[in-house]
Amino acid sequence: EVFSSGMLGGGFAIIPEGNDFVCPCGGEVEEAHEEGHAYMLANEDGLEILVHIGIDTVKLKGKHFEKFVVNNQHVKKGQKLISFDIEQIKSVTVGINLDAQLRPQFAGVLSINSEPFKSGDTLDKILRIK
Figure 1 (cartoon, rainbow, N blue to C red):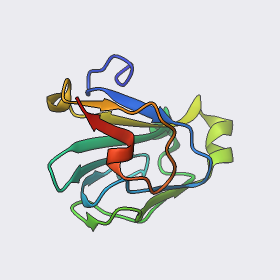
Figure 2 (cartoon, rainbow, N blue to C red):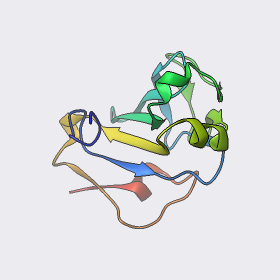
Figure 3 (cartoon, rainbow, N blue to C red):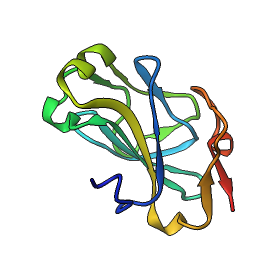
Figure 4 (cartoon, one colour):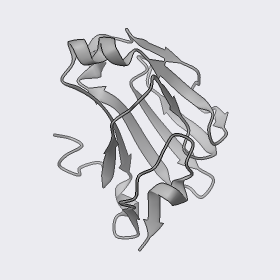
């Protein structure tokens, strides 16, 4: 409900086709959850993006996740943030969507492009300024 209600801002869900999530922009990892299922990223322009992997995955306590970044680490576009065992996660949770939320201060300024995108695409392929 936290994501679907928009409490954390507008966002979008990605259905992963692989076992890796790479950074969609250069910037900083403001927070990498200790159990590996959630990340707060900030790009060079200050856009904050919360990435949450799966539904109820906090209950896995880090199982099936391998982190490649830590808090306050500078990251480059396309850098691997995490690997996860998609089949194992699907077998023990409600879903495997990657949910990305834009912080509320960007509501009304950015919107999500309806065009398909793929791993490694830049934020300007995913988002557009209104």
